[in-house]
Length: 289
Ligand SMILES: C[S@@+](CC[C@H](N)C(=O)[O-])C[C@H]1O[C@@H](n2cnc3c(N)ncnc32)[C@H](O)[C@@H]1O
Image (cartoon, rainbow, N blue to C red):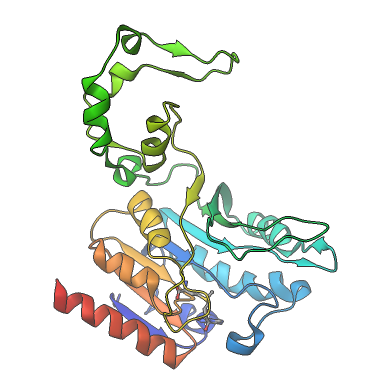
């Protein structure tokens, strides 16, 4: 199988090619397809009532090529239309389950800098779904890989330990939350959200809410991922040398993240202009490394 390539064309046709994409060959799929009726001018836009029929043939190929212990992350969000939320994402989840996928998890991508606005009937919509599908209940997941260094603040905090910090204190509201500051003394790495929470002295386990700002710099695409988003899932679900596929590659953020993390990538994209942009970035990375 060719690795570290971007194929131009419609992914449903490319994925059907078994010599390019053998059975059980991909470790992780991270992708964001065009959302229904969005950005018609730049890259199409499938009608909500046609979305499931459009996506199912693609997802069948993805199922065939994903390794049994692999993961498929689908970033998507339904719009509100005529005062109601669309239902095509919910219908898609149910249809994918019928085709054999397990809907293993849903990560909520909280976009703290999402488009501002407030309406008489709703508030600002500041999150998107990252649906996690697998082929079986047991899949590869490396939770420690998303930890970050604990940070300088901890040195100061640990210098001023009191007796209370050596006992587990529980929340006064009788929730099951508790903390024992002394347990942190030997830690050098923590989950990213813990850094903030611990500074506020709340101990919270890693959650399914992931917090990355949307991409604001002009990267010649109307909706690229922030680099942190594919990086998070690549670290969580793959090891070095594994293969990551993005069948709606855009300007190649998934490929860039995979390259930076020493994984191999395969991309598919309709637009020659976006492919050129992706290749330019990856070439620059290779020169720098
Ligand atoms: C939401 S964007 C993905 C952006 C990407 N995550 C990035 O960071 O640049 C969806 C992309 O899918 C491409 N696309 C749409 N339909 C496609 C198809 N059938 N096959 C392959 N690519 C397609 C569009 O040109 C667009 O660049």
